[in-house]
Length: 173
Length: 105
Image 1 (cartoon, rainbow over the protein chains, first blue to last red):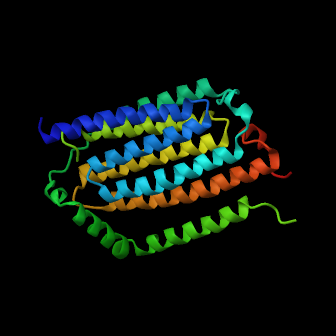
Image 2: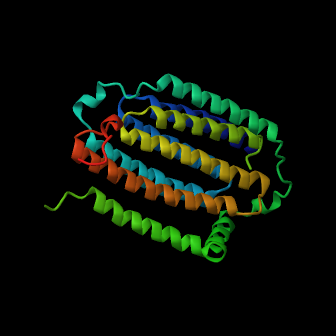
Image 3: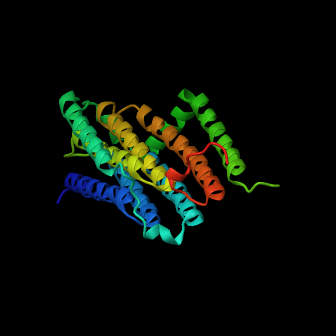
């Protein structure tokens, strides 16, 4: 068994599992289980990033999404859950039309993707450079080409931090 | 790029993820569930960005850099969204979106 086959098989396994977990995120009744399924989906997507040689994005995905966002969602579930939540249905009356709309969008997207005729670029050689080069190049791109967006993203995070604290705190009165 | 996997297959995977997220965002009654579905949709978009980067412009990094920004903004969105959910829960004793239909009170 040679290496390329491992990557191919890994992609198929991960994508099927990720789609399954994503389906469980939107269909399971227990919203706390949905948070765990979401974490699993995000981890599997991180593996797919790794397969596409986007190592830094994969690490950020695990750190930010699995480590922070999924845990934050679990906390929100625990802070707001009621005991009756497990018994009541978790989907509203729109379930059938929404499923039809999502399926129609999926069909349209598939048709567009298959018909677009994107050809992979031949310049693969640059990809062969290792993760160290990837990390260095991303750092350079962030601090040279995208310095203002980078600083703005930091400002946005800071604003979100203050805003979240202000919104979620108990009223002082 | 992944050997033996075409760009179209990755895009189809991302489309499936996006449509599942769309279904969840439209049908979940629990506000936290809607936020989870939104994260799924954002992830699908990120997979697309990284895939286009890896397949069509393997030497460039724009797709990966953009993905980092999307992740940053998604984290900020999740923070503020969950703070709103907790705040709504305090006011209404419920996280069902049907119950959150008042601007005041």
